Image 1 (cartoon, rainbow, N blue to C red):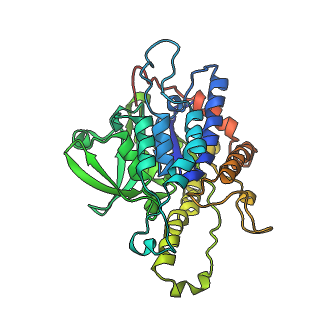
Image 2: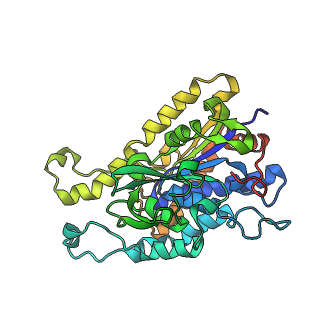
Image 3: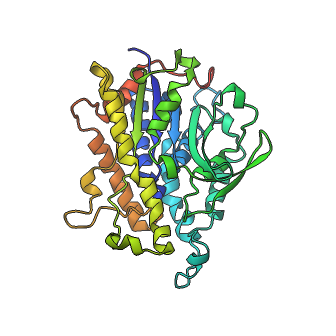
Amino acid sequence: MENKVRILCLDGGGIRGIIPASVLEYVEKKLAEFSNNPNARIADYFDMIVGTSTGGILGCFYLMPNPKRFEPGNSSSKYPASEALKLYSEKGEAIFNQSKKNDWFGLRQLLNATQFKPENIESIFKDKFGDIMFDQLLGRLIITTYDMQSQKSFFFNSREEEKHREDRKFMVRDVARSTSAAPTYFPPAIIRNFGNNSQMVNIDGGVFANNPTMCAYAEARTTNFENIGINRPSAKDMLILSIGTGSQKMDLKNFQRAGNWGALNWAKTIPDIMMDGGLDTVTYQVGLLFDTLDGENKKNYKRVDVPKHLRSLEGNGKPLYNSDMADASKENIRNLLIAGQETIKEANIQKDNEHSLDEFIKKLIEVKPISLNNNPI
């Protein structure tokens, strides 16, 4: 089969990261099954991973190097995909519920709209990622954030171009904290750039790219993937798997009177509007782009997300799970796990001009494999 650049794109969505984590646990199991390699990992079959917010955190998990990876019989990455899913399902309460600030009749929010303290999530990142630097990750990982100091979007890149290689050095845990600092949820991340010894003040990249697939396409178009012999690939040279977090139709109460909303109402609502507003647009744009290709190349793009009937506010008016990015209640986590399994089932239904998920996984294996031990991406 003709060689391709394999790209994984992961949306933002807070605790709804359970959904892509469930899908990727399935993908990794199938990679092991189809390749007859029990040690197969997500890191072995993607040349680039691009993530926003919760998607960025997942990317860090999949590309954490296994200290024993050079020894026979060991996997390349430290954590199997099941470990990332376990983190969300078991630590979600600590990240959100146990971190919630006291709210006395809502008066605190007039002075500080941030709902959650960052100590728990920072402790988890420290435990899972330690002091590993971003450029020590197994492969090419692109993670979005917005730098408030320079007032610009910023893309952390674990394989920086030579001109930035020495002046952009970050800890993995700081990158994860930056991309997940959603406004009104967590305070901005104040981190150190070890390359030029400067400081950054960052917030969630979801404010401009909650679905980072178009960012991934643009980044790939300017990248030389030397290890697989493809420089500046076009769409026909790419395989893109894009996974959503099941955002729902927002329940905007009294939206007809939004012109009279106060600062508190807007503070509660605007993050969801900003982060969810562009999702369908990016999916539509990328779909159109790949639809211009000929033959089988039309199927080089696969979007996986929760079936609409499970996240609709129509019908009985009650979706399967709460779309609130911070609802880490036991009931909602259980329902998100169900939604993840339903997403996998839906993704394996054969549709026109689209591979089933299993067929797409087989294509990932059929193209030239990468060797993380000898020639890291």
